[in-house]
Length: 235
Image 1 (cartoon, rainbow, N blue to C red):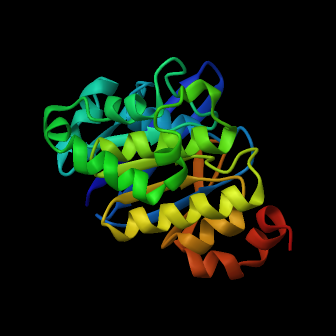
Image 2 (tube, rainbow, N blue to C red; image 1 turned 30 degrees about the horizontal axis):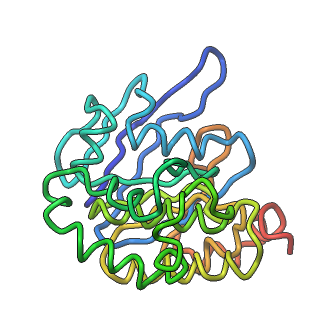
C-alpha cells in the first residue's frame, strides 16, 4: 500500500469532517472521491497533506507513519496536491513556478527534465513560460498548479476539484493529463464535482457523507449503482 489511513478522525466542535476513515490505497491506483458539498472531502485532503492535524488515527505513506509530520516533510516524502482555486506564485513566471515544485533535493536534481516533460504535457505552459503566473487564465493556472505538483516527483497526487469553474474543453484536457499522469505510475486521489467523470477515470470510487465513507467499490460498479446515479450523477 502506498497510502493507508487508519481510523482517521477530525472534528471542529460538533462538526465532524472525518469520522474513523479507513483507506487502503495501492501504488499506482486512481481513486475518485465524491460526495455532497461539506461532506469532508477537502478536509480529508488537508489531513493527508498535513495542513490539518487529526484528532485520532494514523496516516502511513509507503509504510512509514507520517501522521505527525508537517506539510513540507510530507511533500518531501512524496505527497503533492492541487487546490480547488489554483494558487500559483502570481509574481513569478510560469517557468519559475514549476521550479518551485522541485524544492526537495531529489526533485531538484531532476528539475530540468521534469519541467520539460510538463511543458510537453501542457504545451500552453511552454508558450507562457516567461509570463507571470498571475496573468494566466483560470484553466492555465490550474494546469500550472498540477504541473508544479508533478515536478516534485510525487508518489501520491491529491487533486481537489481540478475542473471547478473551467470551460468544458479545458476540463477535457485536464482529465486527459490526469489519466496520463496515472499511467506513469503516480497514485491519484481525485475529489471532483463532476462525479461521472471522476468515476470514469478512476479505478475505485469512494462516496463520503458527513465525514464518513458510506459507499466504496470499483468505479465501474458505482457508475451503475442506482443510488449513486440519482444522488450524484443526475441520472
